Amino acid sequence: MEKIVVLGAGSWGTALSILLAKKGYKVVVWEYSKERAKELEEKRENDIFLPGIKFPENLEITNSLENILKDTKFLLFSVPAQVLRTVVSQISNQLREDITIINSAKGIELKTGLRLSEVIKDEILGKFHKNIIALSGPTHAEEVAIQLPSAIVAAGDLDRGKEVQQLFSTEYFRVYTSQDIIGVELGGAIKNCIAITNGISDGLGYGDNSRAALITRGLAEMSRFGLYFGANPLTFTGLAGMGDLIVTCTSRHSRNRGVGERIGKGEKIEEILSSMKMVAEGVPTLKAVKELAEKHQINMPIIDATYSIIYENKSIVEALSSLMTRELKEEFHLSKN
Image (cartoon, rainbow, N blue to C red; front, side, top):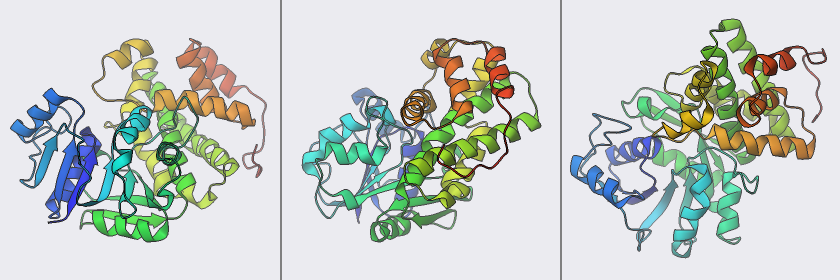
């Protein structure tokens, strides 16, 4: 039985681990908390994030990273974006040329402004760069875990991407390949920021018009940002762009939309984050995107308005007014800025 290693036992890591185990692989899932790892192994379900979804017998939970990559050819990272570097550093000496490295987290590292594949490359000191695949798309763990039809993108080196495509594909989970890892990663990161904005709109009681405008203009900002950094513009019309943006901006499962909704209803960001069991990746990524956009003079008014609400304590009414009353312009202006 082929062995797959998954680092991270949150909702997404768990859902993907169950999918792989049901396909017949031996899946070893690492959980950073020793106490939580013991609970997961004893209960045989992730009762916090995916209650009622039982683990297959061939899914093992561990708290140890010692020799964890022995006999595996696939390593899946499913840890929060801002701790990815730390986890990579703990297993980097175990990596081999024959291991395909898959990252399913979404975000931009705040302290460096690097995409997550770049974080992995940076931490493994230039080795195995072609081995890294980004797995991203409109796929909530809650729906994948109960086998509702979903589609996702495996981006990076085409040969490695095809391996990952075969690894994950099932009758309910369809995987496409892409060679545009830049676009796929930036789409997955920025959509979380735009989802916060949509949540604020929902929390204020605004309607479908507002939601559609924010999604559409959010896509324009995402595309503009991606084009500047060398992404393929078509990527943002696909699953990892528009697809993920739609689901994250509209779904009740979306943590980032939920954060925004609570802000729109008057809660403070510090209170919201301290009450959450899961990480809302869009909050730190928002700051990283804002800093990169300013550095490279990329026009991103929705990001600016959302940043001002969360990080500058600007009133929502004032931020909205500045967003709606800025200089009028034509809809499509095909330049990097």
